[in-house]
Structures are given as C-alpha cells and as structure tokens.
Length: 121
Image (cartoon, rainbow, N blue to C red; front, top):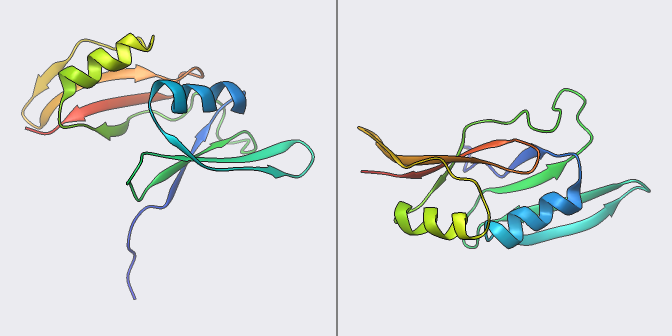
C-alpha cells in the first residue's frame, strides 16, 4: 500500500462562475465535473489536460477565505511563450525571473489566489 499522487487541491473563491471562466478560458484548464451540491453549492473540478492532479473551486471552507492560497506552481517547458499567451488573455504576469532552480513568473486569479508559472532549468 502506498500513496500515488495528490488528487484534488481546493482553491477558495468567492464566485465559482467567474473563477471557472478564468481557469478554463484564460489558463486552459478543462472542466472535469460541474455538479450541483445541494441547493446553494456546486462541485466544480478542473484540470490541466493529461495531468493527474486537479483543482476544485470551493466556497464552503470557513478557514479558507477566497484568495488565501498562495504559491501553487504550474510547470511549463516554454515560460516565455506561456507568459506571452497568458498576458494575451489579460492575466497580469510579473516579469520572468531567473533562479538556480529555474525561471518563474507570478500571477493571481480573480480572488487573489497566487500562482507561480515555472520552467525548470
């Protein structure tokens, strides 16, 4: 018996519809599930095509207010191309920085959850 991977990461948001559009239309995530969860909630699970880990847009965790997630890494093999593409979709990207561990740029979703776009060396 062993653990195999991280399955779902909860991303706290204030408006699931706005956030779903950001992650699908601007970042290129695909909708894995969008289901009613009682009268006032939705289970929205999104993923990067081909990736094992997905995200869920959540509004129900009191200890996770919208914008409280910071530092999640998205990896690319072409940071300059991806930086240009995301900027072209209206995402405010930081300048690309070089570090011994790779190159990176940061950005935020509509609720100010912080993401890092990373390219390994």
